[in-house]
Amino acid sequence: TDLSSKYLLRSNANTSNDLQKLLRSINFVRPLLGITTEELSPSFNLLKGDPDLTSV
Image 1 (cartoon, rainbow, N blue to C red):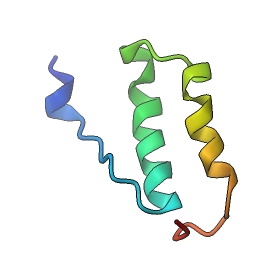
Image 2: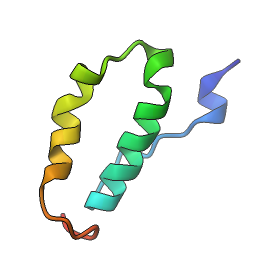
Image 3: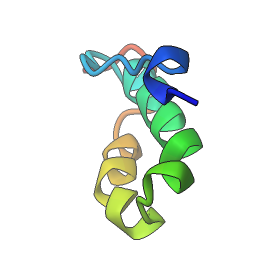
């Protein structure tokens, strides 16, 4: 199966909500790509900022 035709990842995360959506998508395909949770940890730490979903 060609994953590129099924999944489109938006990479321009301008708000916390955009970042959450992007990381959710990456986390969903993470096992297929062989990416560990530890490798994504710095990205998830970015979400520990302002709880306002529209924050930059």
